[in-house]
Image: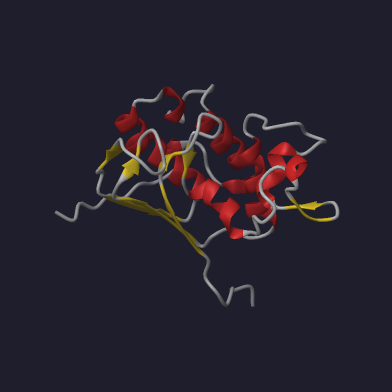
Length: 176
C-alpha cells in the first residue's frame, strides 16, 4: 500500500523575515525539519561532517555562490518533490510580525489558514495577510522583483505546488 503510516503536518506562522527572503511561512518552515547544526554558512564551519552541509547552508554553496534569487524555493521545492511534502500545511496568523519576527509592529489578523499545497498557501498568506498589513513592497508575491515572488515561484517550478492563484480553490469561514 502507498498509504503513509504517519501524517506530516507542517505548522508555521507568517512574519516578515528579511529583505533576502521576505517572509517566514510554510515553505521556509521546511528548513527547520532537518539538522541545522553547524550554522548556515559552510565558510564559517557550517558543515555537518566532511563535505556534508546542513539543508539551511545551500544558499552559500561554493558551486552556486549565493544567496541567489529564488534559490531557497528551488531547493525546498526539490526536497518536497523528492523526499517528503507535508500532508497538510497550517499557518497560524493570529499575530503577524510586519517588519521583524520578534518585535512590533505587528498586526492582529486573527487568521488560521490551511492547505495541502504549501506554495498556494504562502502565496495567499503573503498577498492577502502580510502584504496588505505591512505595505512593504517585497512582501508582494505578485511583484517579480520581490524575494517572496522569487522563492515561492521557484518552489512551484521545482515541484513544490501551484503558484497561479486562479488554479486554486478557496473556502473561507468566519468564526464570528
